[in-house]
Image (cartoon, rainbow, N blue to C red; front, top):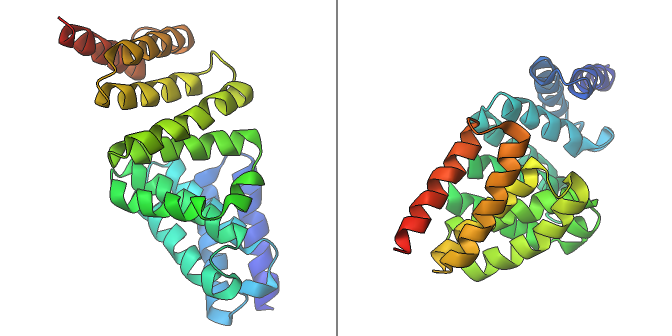
Length: 231
């Protein structure tokens, strides 16, 4: 009976998640986790990492990254002893945890998570271009914030062609990654290259969202500041 209840809760959570009702999915995944952990059912359910992942993403959709962090840590703590640290589900949750830390500006913790992801190259290889683009974009940002600029540059060089292929060359995601790479160049004192990237990022964001969009205004302000540094 507990296993049947778990599957019912997971199926209900999945139904809400897959229709974009992330907040409504949260209590069902939480109840499933409670029963899984109470009755030791982790190895008896299908795709055990998935519901921890979707549960955490439900909180991320609410910008509640601290709650998402707790869920991802909980999932890793349960999955790693049962399946090993290189189990794809563990690596997936490490990447999600790193993303949550990045959003909370806990850059050292985020770096630790993504370096664990990099220790599982098979996991990265198994991702589609969209997944790889996102992973390398986050890794680039994390390395930048930890002042590991050459590694950040390498990550962004991997990220950009994948992002163009997956999202489109004029997509908002390209604007985000151009801005990330520009920050790396600026910190390396390569202002000409940095400003050129911000020009491209600004044009994309303006086209996609307009001049008053927060990211567009942020890029414009940054570009102006950097241009003034050259005078």
